[in-house]
Image 1: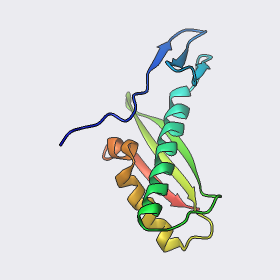
Image 2 (image 1 turned 30 degrees about the vertical axis):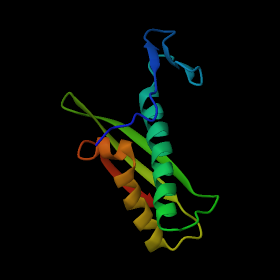
Image 3 (image 1 turned 180 degrees about the vertical axis):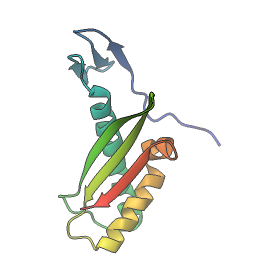
Image 4 (image 1 turned 90 degrees about the horizontal axis):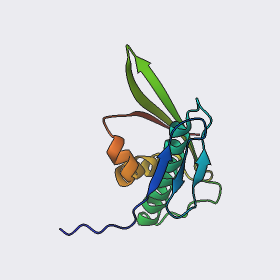
Length: 131
């Protein structure tokens, strides 16, 4: 099987009072005031955007039309236990107008499609809630 790179995200990060991150294409340019949990915000934004795309793909594969109000709210926790740091996550997903059983099937399927979900599987405890 031949792997095809679809996209490569490139960022440059700096530390200190004027630290931040900037993407090579300039679409992302954020300054961080220390201390700030920016990594968790950015990770939540990236993972939930990917997960939303995976929900859309799962719905398309099943010929289900998603309503315009479909949304994902991500909460990423930075945890510490005896000096060990780890992440946990909650996804609160709204799929208005779709039968809850069908919506739950889409949410499960999306985790098997989303590259972020695959990468974190078994490493980040994630709760996915249909709201």
